[in-house]
Image (cartoon, rainbow, N blue to C red; front, side, top):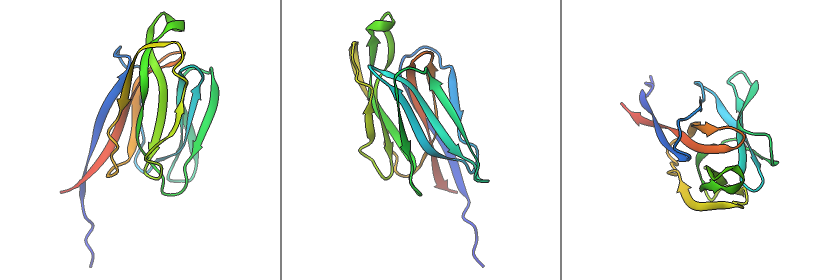
Length: 165
């Protein structure tokens, strides 16, 4: 008779990248849920990031962080595709009194490790810094956190790692 292998799960947090002001959003998938689509709103900079989530019963719901400006780009995941990380740039956006915001963003998956994007042009941004969350092929991204308002100010990722007991 086969025995179930019990695995210990740990959620590791990376970031936030961008503004270091206190976070005002945090989202984590519930047990059995998975991301099935990522939406990025962007123009000169990244306005927002959103996710469509598939529940175990087949229904879906959406969450979004940021504003409604810019154009919308959607990434629909194929079966077996999951998020492994994010990368991009952040800096001081001149049109927002030099507020620190996410300027460009790439979305990385296990099937596209080089990333979708970049989204956002990084225009009118000074003091530009690059960021790159660890690309953890051994565990999916299960959540995000950071700061948002009319724009995406910061973005961090939550990665689930599993270890045998």
